Amino acid sequence: MTVTSHHAKSPTPGEPLTDADVLRIRNDFPILDQQVNGKPLVYLDSGATSQKPISVMEAEQEFYEQRNSAVHRGAHTLAVAATDVFEDARATVAAFIGAQDNELIWTANATAGLNLLAYSFGNASIGEVAPEARAFAVGPGDEVLVTEMEHHANLIPWQELCRRTGAALKFIPVMDDGTLDMEAAASLFTQRTKVFSFTHVSNVTGVINPVVELTRMAHDVGALVVLDACQSAPHLVLDVKALDVDFAVFSGHKMLAPTGIGAVYGRAGLLDAMPPFMTGGSMITTVTMEKAGYLPAPQRFEAGTQAISQAAALAAAVNYLTETGMERIHQWESMLGQRMVAGLDAIPGIRVLGPPAGIARAGLAAFEVDGVHAHDVGQYLDAAGIAVRVGHHCAQPLHRRLGLSASTRASAYLYNTTAEVDAFLAAVAGVRPYFGITGA
Amino acid sequence: MSALDSLYQQIILEHAKTRTGADLPNEKLQGLHLPAGVGQCHQLNPVCGDEITLRVETAASGPGDASTVSGMHWAGDGCSISMASASILCELAVGLEVQAVHALIGNFREVMRSRGKLEADEEILGDAAALSGVSKFPARVKCAMLAWVAAEDALNQTS
Image 1: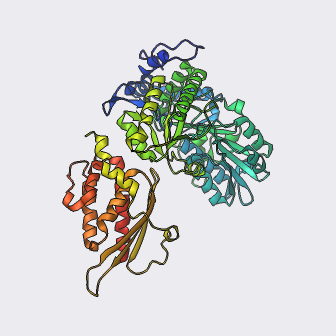
Image 2 (image 1 turned 45 degrees about the horizontal axis):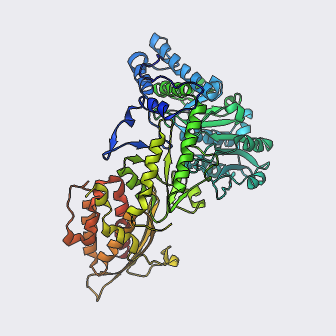
Image 3 (image 1 turned 30 degrees about the vertical axis):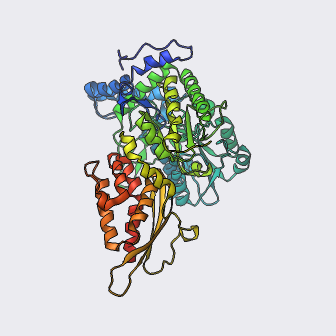
């Protein structure tokens, strides 16, 4: 990929990001420079989907203008060029999370990735199964363990796997402060636990789970570990080898890339033993009318024509993040998250979900406004040009656990300034007075 | 009036607080074994979690007479638009003939789906005319319609 001329000069490497750096970063995101309802747009919904820098959009356009072709088939020059783009993108994204090229499978998004795993495990559980695939099988007497804070995408595929196979679904409960009940967790890992799937960072509370500790507990009982890295891969240094998880999934669109592309990481050796989920073209060796042999990973899990331009764009997104520096992005967003919580705590009638101020959290804050429904809060903020998420954020069980049906969530990214957080806080302070609610 | 103020008119905020008809007791939420002339419906908006269970009671003064809505009770949780809309509906519907309530619901739906193009007729819709600002916010139309959809289904059960 050519280096785009639009990319603003990188902030000084190693130094913490400043508002001046972020203002330069914002030049790379044309969508941010607009008025909404007569007010400057303050985009605080990156937890749902991120905005895209020019370099990412150019990568996709350049692919279609110069290299578009089918990959892994055809001998013509364009086909080779397209295959190079596709596989170079895989190498870039794999390196970004500390993985080898053949450990990264392209999927549409994290939801598709989690379903791929749940269905592959299901395929290992029913019918005639190759001996090496039995390690993934679950059935009656076995347990799949999740947590109470999961996004529906990391809950329902496992509910369905259990329904199909007769395994039981268990969960680690959440404490009042949004963290996992580690005492309960200790007793939930047993020899029956075959799969443990959990989120790295909660999309509601911003809680950052102790991945290494939980993974060790799971491995001690021989369970496979699946990490939902949807809210971590875009925002902090993610090293799947250091975390020692067996699988990890994430979505491109939450990390500056287009929709339609995401990835599953699988530890080398595991992927080649796991039965495929989607079958068809491009993933086979020899096919007869009776049966087929399958390629090793990653092709084993990439049936059909893939999202090639999106993969190229995800690589451009990863390059943008790497150039800026994931550690610095994480520090900047942590600061914004703390600023949100401290500011929200100072407004009467606001309850922030999750860890209190001063305790580590991702750059987001979900909150309840006493006397005003989240939907009305979101409408009021939208009139002030502020885009937030309202509702249950695809985490109904967690909301129920925290005693509410809906909340308002502001989620930041590397392009949000402290001034934007302050504008958001000032607007939130106006919500209860507007709806005629008084008192603390 | 700003778009926001047209959405949240004072009359709506008041209905959202007073909630006429929001007295369906917990033990009746399941709606099992409803007596003749009574219908009940549960509606959920999965996008935002707004929820309502609405019960409608109808009666005819004699054989061959048209049924009228003799009572409407609900329990719900949701945004101010959905709660105010249920409250307004209760005030409008009780005492009307069933067919008139159906016509009312049809009229309200048409206004809500108009994307701000139809003026609500206050003669017909009463306080519900204040909800016409909602039609300019497509994401909120479902909130306003929640109770009305529940009432329509509940009424259909009584005929």
